[in-house]
Length: 143
Image 1 (tube, rainbow, N blue to C red):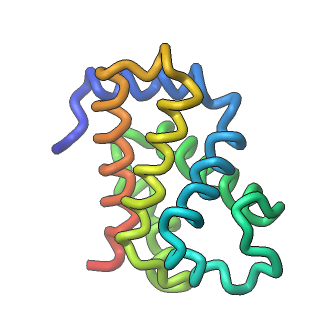
Image 2 (cartoon, one colour):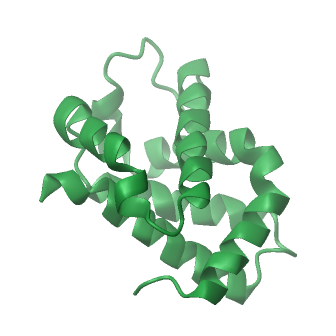
């Protein structure tokens, strides 16, 4: 499913409402990922404290959401816009691309919890499509 122009407008409008809480969204989403999908901890073996509330988890959650923020600005061409992130994840970090779907799901869950009024069915669909497109763009260099 590709993003329609309407989807892009919905994503941008929703992001403008929630971006001020990006750090909180990212910290909670990463925390949930580490709890619900403990196998993802293997990518963070270098952290002294792998607990979901650790300073490193919170910091990485913000890093993830900075990437999402960047992707919103590059929504018209995610694959070329996120080329360096795709290369980093594929060649340096060697993250299994399945994990992009896992973190995307957790981001959606957290957004729905934190913004219940704004997270309408229309926003849910648009954000889901956007995060799936973002995951595909990050997976581009794996092919």
